[in-house]
Length: 235
Image 1: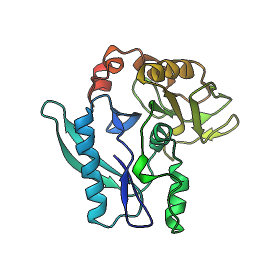
Image 2: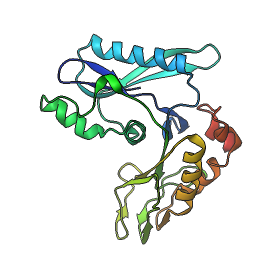
Image 3: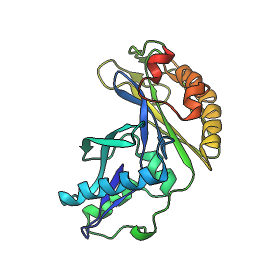
Image 4: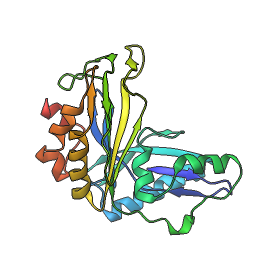
């Protein structure tokens, strides 16, 4: 759950992010809202996240992470990341808020640019982490980038750290870019994600784009009824 501790002491919650598509316990895909969360559960989720922030007088952006037992509907606190996270763009797209700007406003003692009492989530957003790694075994695949063509189109956003001519080394994180898509609903977001993955061309280092093409057509993922074991079942 994304929270924001405002300069005036209030803490607000900006929805949840589903992060169950993982390899080696590291996230590959994030989406908001979570297809596993009912409106009643979301209300409990966000209220708990706000209470956690209020309990410590939290200021600025942070993420409260929990594990969910879908059978019982119970959730359990895992940790809090006291920073902006890699997957924050899905929240930005669903809420129409620039979280980096809001962080700076909090730090400067300014009020938020939005009405905290009128926060409304609209549509659906999905983020894919484009890594320099083998799409089958997820082993590192560094190398020189000879071609880099980003997808474009309505509802498509790319936050990238590389262009053609750069080299992905084996010494740092393999993340090259974040591909984020937004749609009026999850079905449209999935459709745009498929088109964006097909239109993203990376030549040089190994890349996990083929894995995402497979995932976006996987019946379990498309249904929205998936868990942290989905990648293992695909591999």
